[in-house]
Image: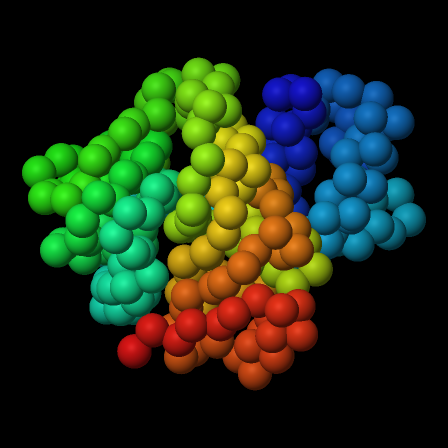
Length: 255
């Protein structure tokens, strides 16, 4: 499964660079059969990333390149600050919540002051550091393997530690958000852990700036039928705002 995921990521990298690929070129490059390549292209087509053509495929949506946590921290800082503050206002005394790793969720953590009896589970080292001395917050960390790119821990141990808990709310950061294909991320293990978080929370709240709408990354976290609310900025298009409202998802514009 891991090899399959890595191979499909390679195909997407080539599509981003070239715009299209041919099965006959991919077979020697990736060292697998033509049948395997066609299966990969069909899977990518099902995710809305490519359009199949005779003998190959062309790119439909360019997945945004993954950036390190330090690079992300410099992007859209003002928007993230407003989104994080709006998210923090949804936390009530006595809540048990999950805060996913990320930079927008970090801004949320910075606003969790003056609360009482709030328990926070997180897989983000930066978020744990931010909340380490916050009065009124009991902090829990998932176990797992550290991914330095995102300063998050993930893997089987991280997923297993969630199994014995139930949470009121999950505050989830994403790399891509599409009306058809749901919320996505770049990394397979991260997507798997995020999916487990969704399963353990009564309410799922996605934090994203409007630049993520219409983007699709390789690994889907969950379809939108599991999302209850989206906190974003005023840059959201009418199409997306109306689409989310049709799905029964609350749209909160952070200002």
